[in-house]
Length: 274
Ligand SMILES: NC(=O)CC[C@H](N)C(=O)O
Image (tube, rainbow, N blue to C red):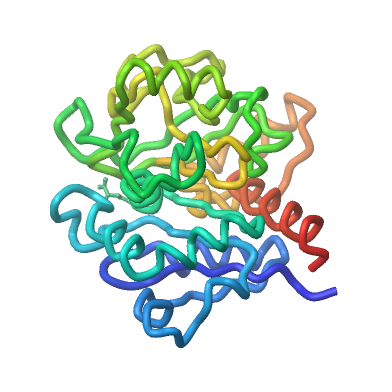
């Protein structure tokens, strides 16, 4: 049985690809960092991978809005390949700048399949500046998202200037009704932040930090799971071991961010017999 093949996109200002590929390798995938131009010119083909990750960074320097130009490039040069990739059951993960790309591309929320038009937006943070901080996240147990299976709460870092999730009332209602809201910013107790700053770092409506498509196979989130793949990444790591011992929780060398990738690789290996 071969390893699950994951493509991590690179190029034009994306800058979390090494960490993202490393996280995927840690959970058993074969991860390849592939430049956008290699896909566009046909040197590499999306169809041979089971997981497609658009990671964090500053593609095209956030010109015209974060993720806008990369989304246009993907739509016009690789739209058919992306549509086919989704139709044959592939998984897509968009992290931070990647989430902004998927939203601009209309691959999320994709109520009736990929629309290639923007239905929701990630706009400038309410606080008016770039936020670099750790957040608590509550996972919606009702969501079909395959990436968050078995998870209830997470702690991950965010680093973004345009992370405020925004949509019209009807779209918000539909997202909530479908269970497509996967992650919400929360307090340390796991209760939704209800817009309070800095627990909700950007003013996202309904505290939304991540959404999925109706199938649960396409997932986008503003926090960075690849940036918590080892326990020492956590700002309180020196206290962590002792705290867990007191709570009778088994200590793990892994950061919880790895679980997102592990779920993806597990799902891909089961559904594709990799
Ligand atoms: N870390 C990131 O991917 C940042 C995304 C984007 N450049 C922003 O600032 O909003």
